Image (cartoon, rainbow, N blue to C red; front, side, top):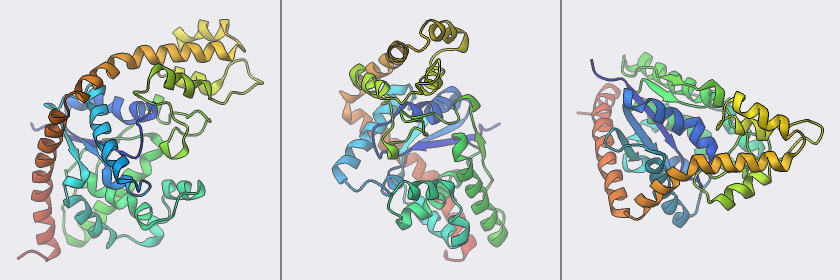
Length: 315
């Protein structure tokens, strides 16, 4: 039997952080060998917030290095750049012609970002339909997502159903893969860790950069242990391992933060070394992206030929 398909992706809108790793990359790493896997650099999604060409260009290469540094084998997963597969935006437009403005206006992520002061551009509003296209183009079976992103999968399923009802059975409705224990990773301010909020701990930062982020974490001065620090620490150690650390360090928040810094550094150091090795071979990384994008484009175009025929625009 053919393997089922799995797809995920991250925006190159800034430096990847440990929330990205545990929310999307780690679930992908743990399962991608079981699937025909696609790992996207969602650069067109990043345009909703990032308007600096030089920074975006550097970030795209940075995310590719992050994927490889984290341990993704390009021989076992298709690593590709969204903007090199124009079928994504083509299908997004088709979906936008099927769903309503009131439907899109219900998006939690959109409302949350507007509440945080982000510009209410049309790309941010239509974001769920581009994400739906990302997923549905590849007949994706499974998408690793954070618990707070389940609505994006619901939007993709709705887009699939709208098209299927209007033009005939074409898209399968994807399922989500959620690791409940790391569904939402808290940031340094206690909110969800997000580049948009500036509350991240960098995934491949230096030890000093990691330490600076951890030491800036908000703590509850009335508790025996800093809850946000503990929540992040649980990503790196079991509860049994952490219990004696937090009992002996009760109310000594500085010592507990230092313990977290040490565990993050121990975890990240081997990945950082592997990333550095790839960074010294930029042409190899570009070739991986080119080959992956070519493969993704071939699959996407085969799907679009069927879609165009059903729409009535192909002769």
